[in-house]
Length: 265
Image (cartoon, rainbow, N blue to C red; front, side, top):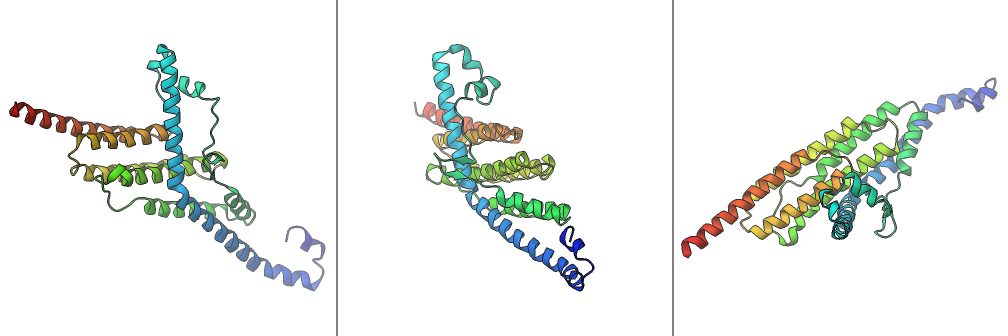
């Protein structure tokens, strides 16, 4: 339309080709969206594993920080994700989205292709709106309807937190790899929504937990989640309040147990 048709505009066939351009544009748009939807599905399926790898990486950073503190007492006042810890950890380069060791590979090429095609077709705003709506729907699928905290090894809790972490990491990575495609408001809104859903699920399931060791393990998983997402510059204030709730329940369980022991003595 913009180059070759102008050169042959005097011929009848040019007019026929010109009329076919909108249909061709629609075919191209539909084809690239099919590719993108396949990519989005794979990203959603891989979110939990991505979160699991992120938690593993945080555990490794915790271990390295502890070793540094053992060697130098002055580091005890610096926590994970502090400026000192981040600088000290620079030598251990770990790209969670492209790492051969953990076999995590997230290729953003289908997204870049879709962005380019829709920009060329003059449909950038429509594409951004459609992508945003798709991610909101996928966010809803990430959150289960209920949560069991009494299972072995906190598997259900881990699965929930890993899925949220993986989803949020992809959102942050998309922001960093594109320009004005995903706004901070959109990404933070999705994050806040997932956090509120997770907090509600955990809070509702806490009443059934009556074992103090189990509560400590639950607290440990939430703490790991908080430290991981803090490193991706997500707000974790509401999650810190959840930790306080878990700790208060833990304290009450200890009081009840010690009270029973005292009465028995």
